[in-house]
Length: 467
Image (cartoon, rainbow, N blue to C red; front, side, top):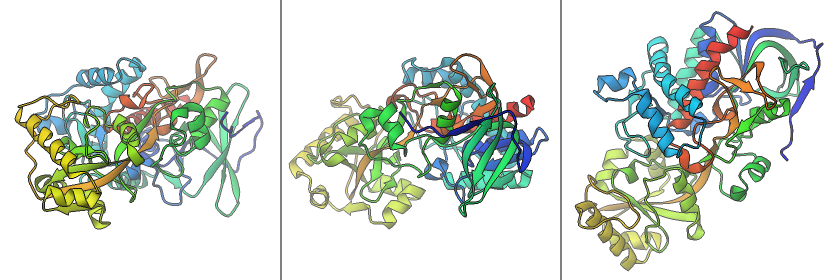
């Protein structure tokens, strides 16, 4: 079993000070929750373990999926929450909480429009992303298309709104009465000093548990020895607190994988190169999957290859088209991306059998011409023919973040295993169950931040109502 964190049960506690709402976690969920709660006219304190907030959001591309936004309408994109809902249900093969999916797909667009209109966070549709479960272009991102950009804008927004942010503070204990009502939290500073803060309501907006080996062993045992690419504090604290209190969890076997992690550099490489016509091969220079059918599951497929590596092959046209992306710039800077004048040069760079590589490229080009159907079922139609000079990058797969967590209702309130909901405990982000179902294959691009920020706003709206 996982190690339980300490819940102190007592009806009589003294606190150094008290505030109406405490939010644990200064990432996308926590900051969005703080903004929506502050609009209700209450004092809000966000407690963040890191000295400088980073979290999973800082490692992301800062994209959020939402349907029916003003940004989509400006581009003439016909989308709706219903289309979004149906896309999710199809991707997870119906194996998810449909009420939760309905809630998120209905509320994601209002959340995006609200942040744009009220807090000047200029979300725009990222039209470079296509498919991967989304039938419509609905990925939204701030100008720089990075998680750091989005995080910085959210931090500026909460500062302007008068939210108190306490950093470098590790929550070590929750205080609760016998009825499960949360009374306060205990925090510890890096210098060892502690403080007890009383509260009226608590939002758990902590990370998932991808970096907690014991939890991986318990809930996703098949991935026990897998490579992990996640934030160091992705240790499931909020989920553990909820379970110790008697909260219900679901889909704990679910996670987002990623199969395009530059190796050995440990850098995310953008999937646009593959979506737009590139392909992957293993060390035998052979393709091993439909690279765009399951972007999360592709991480597992890469890890099944020899030495757990693969190679993304593309060309000058794609290199020029996407080299401006933050992930591309970083990969180029560290020398992870290789240019080759000929296919033979590329095979030498990566020690790939030239005959196999030539045959693989020939088959891909034939699929793009419509002369043959892809063995793996990928639809290459609309992709351009790759031409020299060619480019390649060596990649591996990894667990990016987990998708299971505490079960919540349409108010983001945490559900009890014995029935009903905790009176003043809310959850979102990595602490709450996602909508991706029980496996890695249900994940859709940008669903993580969509879930985090949409549930964050919902929690921020509803938490003040229980005070």
